Image (cartoon, rainbow, N blue to C red):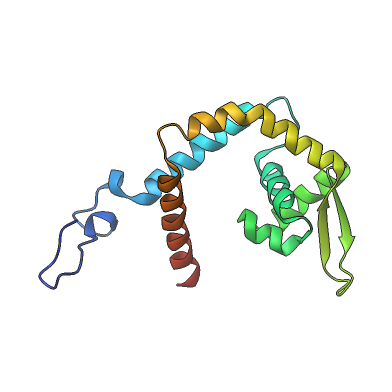
Length: 161
């Protein structure tokens, strides 16, 4: 990167308001391209199931976290509450999740993955294994961890400012 007279890195080529801006150098250009390509690839991989991308995110979150409130699921899935609520109710109808009242606060709904939901997640994971292997071609563990750390920094910068 270029350094300014003060020794601070010049980020102008990453700033849309700058004359030096280069859209192919804009991280969000690549984030959107990767995200959309991933969504399309995963939709193809799940085409034999009734599980859409939002439901898939919810199921993966519950697989790892166990029981979570609807609010926590929305935060992890980065989606609005009405969207999450609608998806969770559909997953409940499909018997993939169960909705319970929180013992400490009856106003809070807790969502739990059912055995049928666990089986569905396992089936999809098995069906998408090769897809993920191809996605990570030519990437090392260190590269993926560094990418995750960088993305986390971007998210925290966006979330806290």
